[in-house]
Length: 253
Image (tube, rainbow, N blue to C red; front, side, top):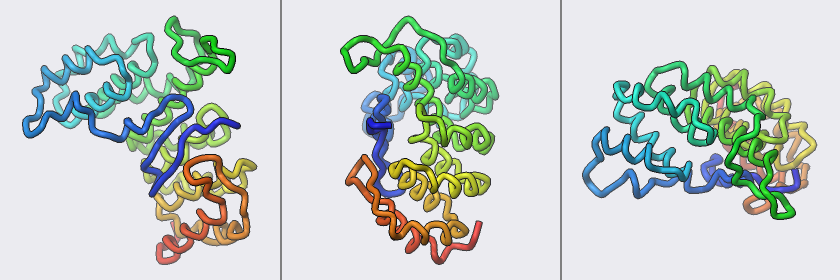
């Protein structure tokens, strides 16, 4: 847990992952936005199939979903078994976003996929390709995609991952994005996590969920001066103080 996976800014909007989830995930891609004119669905498909930088391809995937045109899915079926699990996840995001349940199932399967892959992009501390770090990155990205989908079916899948060191840093963000109240109780439980970075991330997620019922536990953290290892090294107490101010007018959930 010594390496920074991502930092959080207002309401966890700024995401930077140790495992390759870049800030650019949240930024518009020049391949998708071309001034005033939106690209056609055929052009979007061409861009998706020709793009191998996963975060750029994800922006194209979001644009395809926005067309609400499920007729494109047969042309993308082969991507659901793509060897690169990031690109496979992007295709699955399109399927799920256009109402095909295969997409959700593929993303969930990536979370449990620890098999080796031919292409390894992650490098170990000694400068060699690291299969284990690649697997961790792939699983982390899948957990991120579940947050992007905002599908409440993902809550019981994500909650156990609050204790998984491969993906736990992204799970509070994803649960906050899904915005389902069933995530609140397990998040409150995670305020006892020994890692102060996790406690801060969980606090932000509870604010995102407008979890007024978390106030008693949050007030217990107002003297917790342990600091997170990302962004401005925010302390647990500082995050709790801001959360209490924001949540005190929210009804208990």
